Image (cartoon, rainbow, N blue to C red):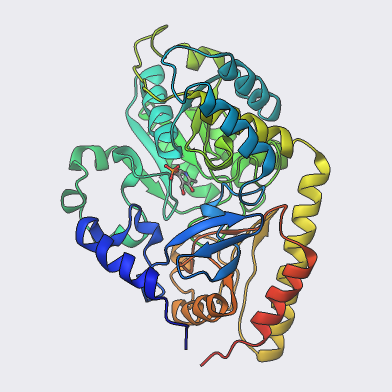
Length: 426
Ligand SMILES: Cc1ncc(COP(=O)(O)O)c(C=O)c1O
């Protein structure tokens, strides 16, 4: 039995009265795994604490941003200094230049960059830009992927699958502009572009799918996306909100050696503060206001605190050793899990790319959304609650990516494996 979390429970009940579902983002809800969402009070290095004072080794990583662990000294120092000089200025600042230059070094395809405040905003803005630049309206995206909650690409995403666009609040006309095919289906991509010649503004892809179990691209898939978009004059948008600065310093584009036309970033970008960014080919980016007719703006875009925190975070990550070590630790954790699962005769897949991984209770590796529906959610709930009880926090969803940070110690990885070995599955 899990320990009673009185303060968390009381806060959850109260917040549920004034905030739908007691959460400011549905991901935080424990609906899928059962129980009430935790209220966290603070974090330090690899750990977070709940309101009742229990600590957890954190593999949720705030859904991606916490690659340096929590309250990293360089980020804290930069953010404090920035707040002291006013948290918001309203015109351009030198930090935007420094940040853009750093991002460009990691992502050379981003010849020009715009900063926004979230991953969703970055994706929605990139889509508008692609539509404006190509004067076409259709967007191709992959079933079960997640690109934020923007109208243009919400349809159809995972759990909302059975809802009609109308009841989801997405205009039918906009849903009709979204063409959805299975992830990793190179043949499907080619056929779709052939059948819709001249209609498709952009192909939007998470290079490693992060919301249906971690699904790496099969060999040739991203290359096909690149080739076909080029051939048909469409824009290739890489949604690297999760993979950017995560699976390599230069994200999927560095890892798979593919150059996107537009790239969307978020999560790690702001060092834990709310940031997003999008950028790419100069000729495309020049369609943006004030240079061109595609409008996108933001009071807080390029905010000085976010920029300075982000600069500190990115500078701390800019060493090849960082990514090597992250990957080795992740492999150690997952090898430990697999060994135990084998011993217990529990079917387990542990897909990972760099330090982005998933604990997938399934017999076979998952290659797309339809296959992800076969994941054993009940077993994941047992895993989630068992690990939580032992002081280890994983995503409260069987299909969302878990992550590891540079702050996780070898000892903590071993403790996590030991905790997994003690779990009882029914
Ligand atoms: C791949 C991907 N794109 C976009 C988003 C949206 O980012 P944000 O939650 O910052 O709006 C997410 C968030 O989980 C994501 O994983």
